[in-house]
Structures are given as C-alpha cells and as structure tokens.
Length: 137
Image (cartoon, rainbow, N blue to C red; front, top):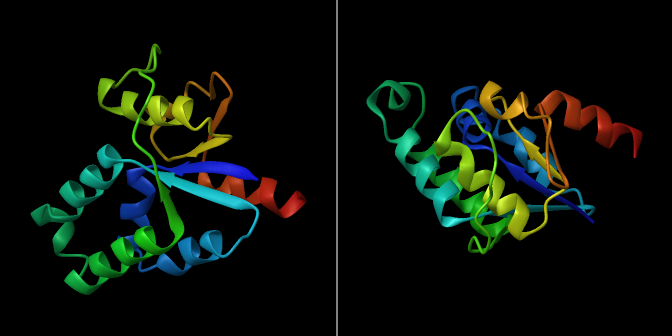
C-alpha cells in the first residue's frame, strides 16, 4: 500500500481548475491510502474561503471536495512533531503527518517543500512526477 499526503495547494488547484476528477482517479486506486489531518482540512477550508479564491470556485465545488475527503481519505491525528529545515514553518505539520503515518509521498507544488526532496522516509514530489511513478507500477 502506498501512503500519500496531498498538499493544500493541489486541492485548491484542482478546485480552481475544475479538475477534481483527477483526485477521483487517485481515490479510486486501490493501492493508495490518502491521509489528512485537522491542520490540512483547516487549511483547505481557510484557503477555499478566501475572497480571491471564491471567485473561481463555487460552494458546490468546495462541498464536493470535502465529500471526497470524507469518503476516501484516512483521517489521522498528528502524533509526532517533525524536525526539519523547511523554509516555511507553516508546512511543518505536513512533515509531522508524514512522520506519524509514515507516508511514502507528499504530493505538492510548494517549492518550500519540493526543495527538501525527502523527509525521513517520505519523498516530496510534484503531482506529475507522482503520476509518472504510478504509471510504472
């Protein structure tokens, strides 16, 4: 089983681009477990409610996203506090979640995370790179 964390920036990108179907494809893969925590859910709620984002997405889009999270993602409370030289301290919770699981991948578009490439056992990669890896499996 491949354990992954999808960063907030991808959830929001899929919402804005009306590409939630890409996430549905991930969710339907029986070899994947997708994890969320309170911090991640709160960040998605916060970012999706911002005025500059709301002009691109509907309330129904947000509802559908949270419905997918509820149906397909595994909720887990963070149990370990990560130690990392991450450039943006706001991202530390993702690394902590990765340590708690332990996750195989954090999928993100965040350059502050991508520059790390790896955190303990977790690879930090872009969505397109993850799709390439999955195509080879």
